[in-house]
Image 1: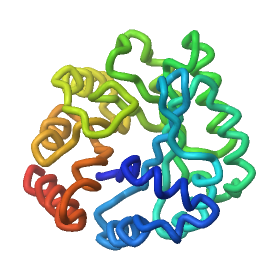
Image 2: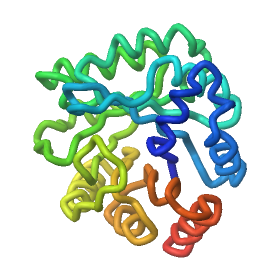
Image 3: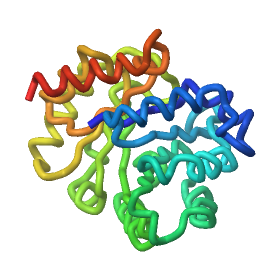
Length: 239
């Protein structure tokens, strides 16, 4: 499955956060959704100090995107922030409880000091009826992603680049991590994010990833629709 990261569109979407339907990128997003090849829209929420010198996606813009897109496709918010729950609480105010199962929230393992705190946070997301995801940054030791944490999450997101910027090159270390966790937890949904293109999407899939978060390879291409269709064809042919 392909999840579309819209980080490259962030500046214009935020500039139109009162009504993102006015963004020049919204027609492209809608066309990509209409292909039927995108499983989810992935929103990268960034704040210092976790992501130094980078702020991405205001809560107002997330609310506007939810209102514009949630009846068309599931969404995900990847919270690259030190304390995710102020964001979660505000999202609860505009996402009805009965619709939260289609809204995925990824929290960072690095946001928490211990396994117990991480498990408690994931359990809190589930109690709020969100789909819960845990993300591990590429430089972080895999030992911090314990069995208890993985079993408490709905999805495990493995970064294959250091998080914080789009357009980076896929790391071979990422493939080793995907392979390790997919073998340890074969029934778990393993997602991959970072440096995904028409070559590395196959590498990630062969390593065991079930979901690929794809951003700049699609959003910076001359023909995003054709690029998505090509990626889908590559995945089908490798099955």
